[in-house]
Image (cartoon, rainbow, N blue to C red; front, side):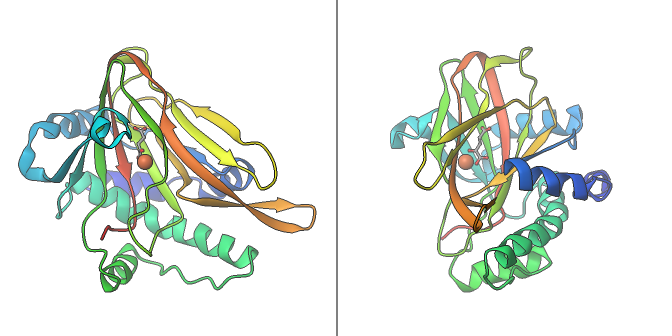
Amino acid sequence: MNDQIASSVAKLDWVTLQQSLDEYGYAKLPRLLSPTVCTDLMVGYGNELAFRNTIDMARYRFGIGEYKYYDAPLPYPIQQLRESIYPELSKAANRYLELSGQTADYPASLAAFVEQCQQKGQTRSTPLILKYEAGGYNCLHQDLYGDIFFPFQVVFALNQRDTDYTGGEFLLMEQRPRAQSRGSVITLDQGEGLIFPTRHRIVPGTRGYYRTTLRHGVSTVTSGTRFSLGIIFHDAK
Ligand SMILES: O=C(O)CCC(=O)C(=O)O
Ligand SMILES: [Fe+2]
């Protein structure tokens, strides 16, 4: 199979992406998924055999919409994304651990990290595809599925805003210690991605580094249907 995605990831300017993570806490990725790959993934939404679980978001009051967790083995483009992005993000994760005075212990490969998850009983795959119709939204949340979590995750837009749907912007809320929260609205075009913190962010302050708490969600889709792909690196209990 061709490894177009992995070679695109290898060509990314990770120095600039790291600077964006330092400055804003998140970093946008250029289009890594072709329209064909996006379409294949959206068509695959109907293939129940590919998924381990389907969640009706309203049922849990997570929002309005539906998402499905892929079963292992993951579809090839998703496995490639997860495997090729992880090593760069593990460097970033270790750097932030060191800055905050902790031991830098994220392994360099996804396989080694997934092995750590397995040892803690986190064995179920977490990459997911989400579908929101008009009126749909995703409440602010964190994706934690056990003791082990990876500090970054990535989301990709599978279809095109303002053509296939309106509204449905990605939301990132940063809760700062002893201060009010700051919100960011991020729009992604088809195939583009966003790296954002799973739980916390390490921010330089006047007296060393401090930690903020992040939540993410999606604003209301006002028309059409929005599809997205979530790449979470830790597996679930
Ligand atoms: O649909 C979105 O853009 C948000 C998806 C999400 O919550 C995630 O990828 O964890
Ligand atoms: Fe999420």
